[in-house]
Length: 354
Image 1: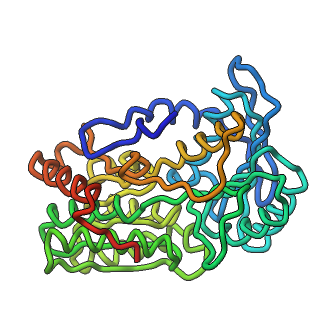
Image 2 (image 1 turned 135 degrees about the horizontal axis):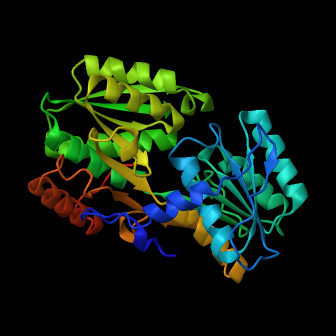
């Protein structure tokens, strides 16, 4: 599948949603930290000897966003390509290291690390094990080091989607204050913040942007109570829209939105169902497509190392504008967002990453 199924700033393009929900129903039997699991028996498909292992960053399955999307990509590959899939969840730094060491010992055809925190470690592992193929989702290059030929680093232009979300927030806000709740203080979260701030100020230079981060360690992506507390703080300070880029911590932001009956912007997947009627939009990252495509290329013998970029240009990043949020985003806003996207793609608007 190409990234054509991703949503653009045009109505009702989340065409993969039914597929995603049905695949999620084929649950992976995932055990606790650094435990290995295998998919349940899938409907009649041709099985393959090709093996794939996904290693998740902190937070694990059930975040209803980034990690669940990666899991959907593996489930789709199991269903359509017949690959044998394993999943391992790692909860902290030492467990991440153990999980990756164990993964290399198992020698799958492809090892996919999901989360930017794996970048440096997998870079080193790929250099040390040239026969093993690796991929890292949300890859952060190591300064001064080339990407090994057996490693595909998947980079998302998060700032582009965040720019459009910020622009929409500024168009929609009634108070002149909008909020941002991030997970770990990290380059990826700062990229979302940079794009969101730039988009909001492009539309309204005087807008106030309230910013809260959940912490400085990976656990900041797995703390819904903290996310709720930070969002309530921003809503109570006058923000009427909050964009979260906080992983599972963002589930608490939706709790706060429901409690205060204020607008919220989702991330990674279409998160409308977390607060129906209150989700202004979501910045979608087609992590599921990225995972599926790298699995398919490995199986087909066309795997390429280096950096693979996903953004507005290939619908790897997109903004949800569909029937659900039609009452929240009027036609004038949709038209302006389309023009802003066109300017980004044409290079007329340079969106900062930091």
